[in-house]
Length: 458
Image (cartoon, rainbow, N blue to C red; front, side, top):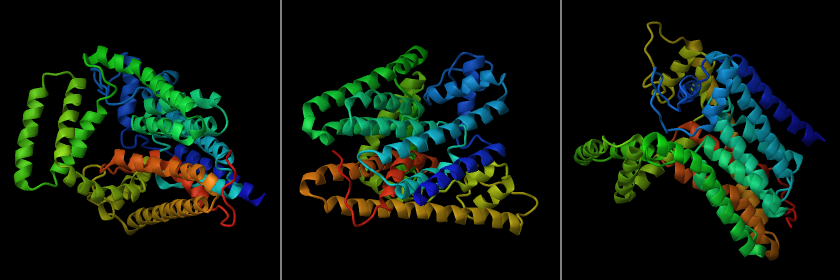
């Protein structure tokens, strides 16, 4: 009973905290929220999917349409009020948070996990209180929608494996929803589907067909957006983000670390590439940029691996404290924190005020940062201890059961590894948010009794 009360308390506090922050929001755009808002407004006012704010916006394909489409509905319902649209979008995200935690608890109570209340409390705590989870579940961006769809897909996924194939379509549909929210879910969805025959080895042929059919359904579900881009630009493709990110971020930032002589030659080459592709449509330019970046990254693979290893750890240190202060409109405290303790580039460099930052402003910002780091550290400790205890319990099982139990533990671990590879050296805190479901699963193992093995899963 005590564990059940703690679990309920964690859920209620997590939701209540978001409602309080939501009620006092001042700047809910976050990193890219303005772009999604622009797209939603253009859908309603100009009947075009575009990030441009102008009288004649041109089509764009940087984002997927699901979240801007939902915001467009809110924009219509609010009689074209931007402020009301932002509040509605935030409220919708809180609903997705509730759905996420309910899906997670239901999934972890059942096969193959059989988590008890205290374990569920640890998982729910990581899901609801990791610093990035709080902030990026409130901004009007699609991150929380993607996390909700991903956890829902995992709910159906594990029921497909350990209960019945009748749940399979639910997993496929929600994987598709997660992709329409955030394209980063593409490799994750396909990897999890491809793993089904290796987990359900007692029906390998049947499950190979099931997994392959799921991939085909997802591809078919993405075709409408691919065709939209074909009509809009003349070149078929899902999104322009992968090519431009590879070119500008992965390759572009690596170039900055090379010697001045190499930089000079490469920048000249990049200028030539951009000149050669200038006559192509948006989608084709993105594809050509991506192809060029892939070739160069392969040629500089050693440097890229070293660069990623150096940069990637920063992904796990950010807390979103600056984002939280900005969300609440506490600009001076936000800038005091960013200039004295942060990256000093949240807005391309913190502004200089005529009135110096006060000790109180610095103290509040620093206090929030330290508290956020403490919460973050506690979450990571649960994840690491959970992975260790889960592996120890799996290895101590009977040989006949060990394979299944290790596979169950490896699912969140390998998913985190895959996401880490996809994210690479681009270390914005919000990119970590998509990892939250797998952190939460591993955290639950941390409170598993050491004197018992995993429960039977078949």
